[in-house]
Image (cartoon, each protein chain N blue to C red):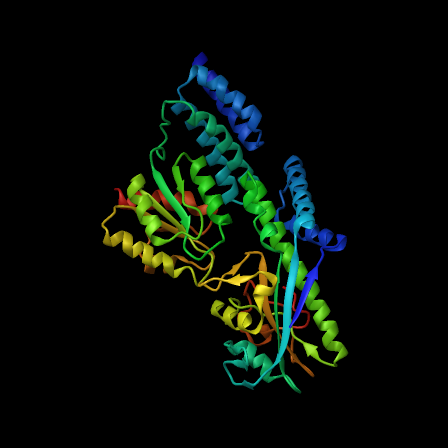
Length: 218
Length: 231
């Protein structure tokens, strides 16, 4: 009974710290929580709090700056968790994502936001940066044995590189869920390019990625 | 060809700040609103300190015009809507080409930021700054044209409306962009990123400020007022 009360109270306090973007309090709470609970359980509570904020963002109850601040807060807290040996037990842990902006494109703000969001959700992110060539994506997929390839392009002239990258990935037979996003894209182009998912915005990236993973790795 | 070195004045910086705030609005959360406001101020101050704003422009007569292109010695502007705007003009027709940049150092300010929120704020402030710089240049060009009894349209950029991004090559062929340290990569993307390229039509009279007059897409996100050219 006491344990249940502790859990509920801790959940509430962690949710409040995430909601108020109070990284310092959040760190202290995680330390306190880790005395009683395993890192896996603690990260579960943290991710529930993040999910609540994401749903608020999806319903426009939270603005983009607020949600981004939430991602910053959770990532700062997760750094603390990552230093612990026991791995987290949420369903996204162990899923490795290679992410990058395709060649010729220097616009990486959107990609950085999505990479931050993935990290906050516990995915392991290999960020190749911007202006990334096809060979670098292929090499990273092999080296890191990634389950997901997330590609971004912000210009109509750089977008076709995604099609080439996806074709190359399919030819090599790598089993990987490809999710693409960026200003000139839409769901139809994503399908035509052979992607498994289309992340229209930060609002949709997590769901699209999870659903692409479940299609490719049923 | 005219090369300009410009400074961001206090008025421009205040204008940037007031235009960025609504886009980074945090409803009902005063603490966050004040944090974001502080970051916007920090970004504006920093950009004011280190930006090296440079611009280059030139004017060229239109050599020929048809329903789908406006041809100058720099090449053709392939846009049916812009060509239609040109065909409604009277008197000798000219194209003004312009490229402006905040410079490499300012353009990379956002990526130097540690948190995602700072990156977002700095990126928004940088984008708004170059927009306002070009707006000021546009106003100055309008004044210059008025002295020569010419009217001028609002700016029109490659990648917008029906002018493909590849149209950048015409603008870069008209101007020596290297004089202001701007390059076009193989994908028609400008480096530094916080740069704007555009053209204007100038003639004794132009039928409207933008080609939106001839466009049926009433709900287009980029639709502009046909008289003022504002979104």
